[in-house]
Length: 407
Image 1: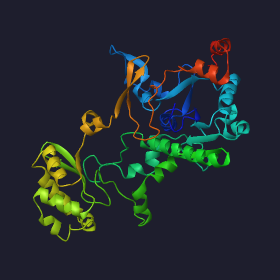
Image 2: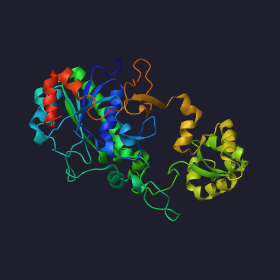
Image 3: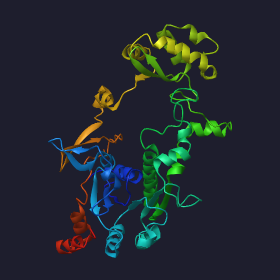
Image 4: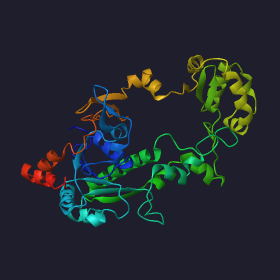
């Protein structure tokens, strides 16, 4: 391997999404990521289907599509950490690891001797990242945390959904487990920062990462809208609290998005819409005025946009350098020429299906490009290989462990 992290070994004890997402990103960057799973069942997401990956004859395999999204480039090793021998295997692997990722409940691994303090005693250079719903401290520390719950508790659903008084109004979660994804990204950043610190000092460290903390941090401008005014932001559908026009508009055959970021773009938009007088109207000439008078401007614009198709508007608006675009479903998105040109859909060899689809990593590094070494592994696919190569166990010893259900 020649990736930027090809010198790093990660022991991934996490499951579902936030931790595995971080593990996949580290693996994409070249790290040797060993995914530890329960014998017989493995990561919960292996069973989160349908849909399942289909083989070349169109039949479902055992691999759920959900599992495939976050486990590329890893090795799967099955170990029963509830057994003393299984715990010893994990400790032995941790001695030679640089990073441990885990998302057990607070204190959950201490009973197995797999907590940070226990592993650090034998490997002081270890980075240990614990991902929980609420962190290691505070009154909610022992509560289980799930993305959906955190989106509600952490404020995201208060600003997501149709505005009050309109059909379909009410709280709405984001269409993907965004808090989990963002937590995985923060976990990766934290691990990289810890590795940089170790390069200077030789010391490992502990990373305490909470879904709730991440959710709150990522409210970005909505946080500051509240903190500077004391007024809680409200749901605005697809509209933007600080920019107008910045939302969806109806067309003759559907809808389009306008994302006007400055007054110059607004003037160009008005010309394309056939209403240059709007740009000269003191109510609309500046963004501050448009935000204040959005209830007047937006209905006027909606009356104008319905007279041409989405593509007709996009062609005219792009020619005028007005940011705009369609609202694609995933089928249309993957057929978009820009998406194709960037190679965002890929195929990797898979032992059950021939090939498995995957989504390209968005990082484009010139010197250490992302490597696509293997599809998400089958349950326990690399158990024998890892235990033999890293721990020096014989085939007979591995067979004995397997016969007792330890691996």
